[in-house]
Image 1: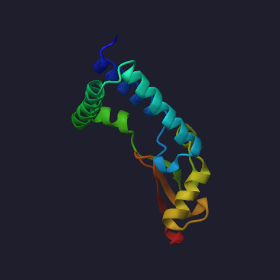
Image 2 (image 1 turned 90 degrees about the vertical axis):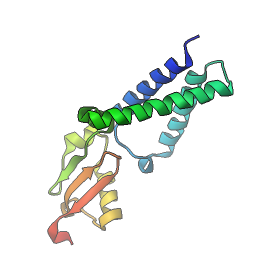
Image 3 (image 1 turned 45 degrees about the horizontal axis):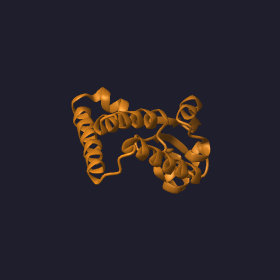
Image 4 (image 1 turned 60 degrees about the horizontal axis):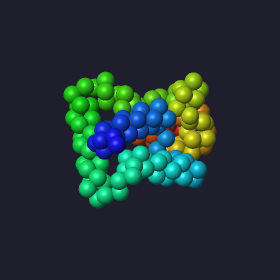
Length: 151
């Protein structure tokens, strides 16, 4: 049997890489299917972590290991900015002067409807031309900066 701490470390870094590669969509942007998929991933992760041992001791050890890794990563991110950029990403301009930057939007799997929804909800804007900049934040949210003449 593989050591439970080693399993926790492997699964933590595997999930970190998978979620980093999957993009910045925030929880508020999840569809019903995305939510179900997240639940399935959680169940599969649990099975991978626990294996055949369902003891309370192993569960507590795994939780401590995962939280410990998370604290270690946060300390390393403070010391190494490149690691922080890789783990958390950087804000990304996806609309500039009313023009969608399609190659960046496609890379992050964001479409114009997502941008217009954020513009409508946060700034009351209705058209792409009213947006000076739309920024995909590290959290996955979209910040909108309106054109001067849109106010």
